[in-house]
Length: 136
Image (cartoon, helix red, strand yellow):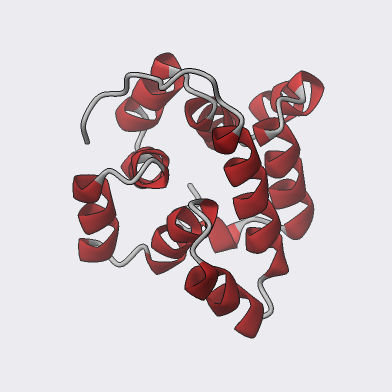
């Protein structure tokens, strides 16, 4: 089980970004090829309560916390800090458009996470409805 998002190869993270964009073919590929947690995270980010619950029940509370931190849930953000998920915390900040977080990734040559953050921000900025999610 991969516990850090940095454990994934770049091509898998690129696929994850495509799934965030709503590419169902890539979502299914992730689901069927050993990355169900990234498939679920992409759906949770897109508002799926079922995917969020799957993350919680299957050993990925850090990805559920990321999902909630993206929408600025302070408890989830504190949880990421407490358990030292620094990259996920920074990703949530970058996905909300925090320039310091984006610069943090750039200084560490982690462009893939800037790309993912921009995809998340684009999706959340274009939502017409505020999804009701459980509090973390």
